[in-house]
Image (cartoon, rainbow, N blue to C red):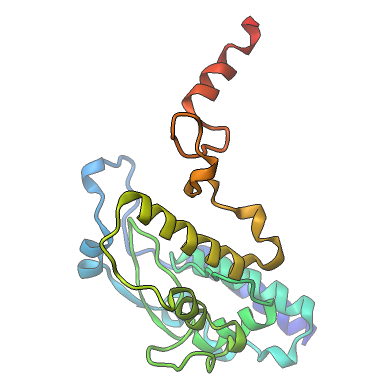
Length: 220
């Protein structure tokens, strides 16, 4: 298995550099060339990932046949390949690498719209799959968002109320995503208690006044 995994990683790396990109490379880009994702969704070419890259699901060993080091190495190569295809692998919660790998392996045979101007993302399960029954199990992303939005309804809110709602939503998000370390990612800019004396949201030290003060530090 060790030699097979080595050759598989070599094949994935070669595929990353060799598959044909459906768009011509442009030497000059105009702002008028940009398209919204709604526009691109209509015209973007569709590619089947295995047929496009030459890497097929049957080439990927089930996770139980691999040790942790092998899972990590293959996963890293696959994520790089998919990123090159503009089909990014993004998890909203902490997911063990073995679950990540198995999810990609089981869903690798999928058709994707290839966007030129917008980011595309890898689908972790087929449409209609009940929550927590996919390869992610307890790390199900659909269940994560279901719980995150649970009890939230559309309301006509004032700017202050909307900001408070955004703070509540964001705190719930980072608590679920980062667990005990969630305070490292606290959204101070949404919390009115951290506004400056003029009522401006917290700027994390990157505001214009700070920049101006920083630019002439040598004069003081």
